[in-house]
Length: 162
Image (cartoon, rainbow, N blue to C red):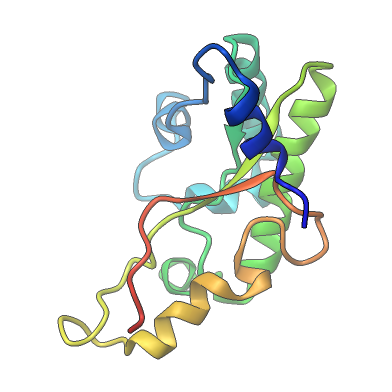
């Protein structure tokens, strides 16, 4: 198995690698409420998401993250979108990859995978064996569901299912 483009960049770069910033903060600065589902914007406002990716690339980002931080069945259920997990993740990667390609620069796309949004037992209602697949299933992960893989997955926090 060959190394990912991201690991190659890490090994070969003689200077710091610049990543993007907080997608949610940028969306909020453009009038999107923190109560809204940022991941759903991949469907409802793709131009806005793409524009933020473009701005980060113009600012020098070498790695951008897909707009998929909360795109898992638990977090999306709060917005009635649990049946659209794969679609939202696929579109999130496609939007980031599209911005990277349009820039004509060498920009990698990281699939952003955030926490489940629920507590795992014994501190919460979800059993670890039920929660872990929510992060591992291909259609729950950015790059799954036919969009082609992200260059790297950025796991912000992953509960251990042991």
